[in-house]
Length: 194
Image 1 (cartoon, rainbow, N blue to C red):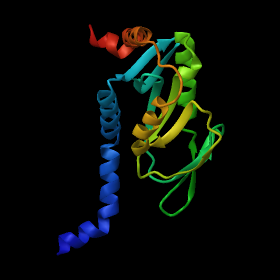
Image 2: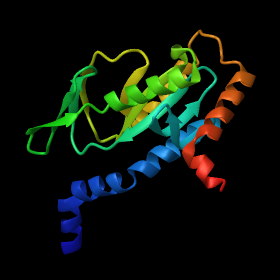
Image 3: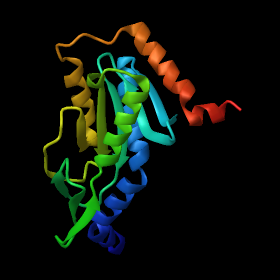
Image 4: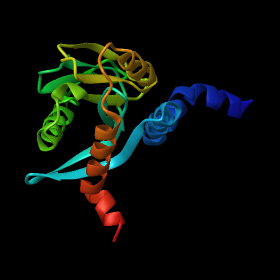
């Protein structure tokens, strides 16, 4: 009875700790499942040397119509902000406001470097920041069409909707060549071959 009462009292804290601990694994698992279910290409933990910088992506998902450059971010409370603001707001459990760096700026910059290095059509690329499902994304405004932030649970539907868009698919041979080039240029995959 005492243990049951303690679990009940601390249930939300236990649930939050569990979500935070398995956050990266959950995203990796969901992105992998989307790739497997749809026969898409997927490269995880990508680090590319472009110009004088090393550009990191948690995942690159190559679908029939788009290339998703995926990052992940865990938030312990609701967040709010505009796409082009340098600072966003995060609310804590006592509803106090904390200023945080805009989680969409760095992925946008990384995406620009990747597009430039590959000399590829910018409409092919979509930057996505995936956040935990318990995070409320409150009033995120002014996001351009190729930059998104969303809960993990919304990503599969987002990809399905985009794949139904009335645009031509990426040429299969070009897509395979692009995937292989990125894989070969990746610092992590190159290091793994030594």
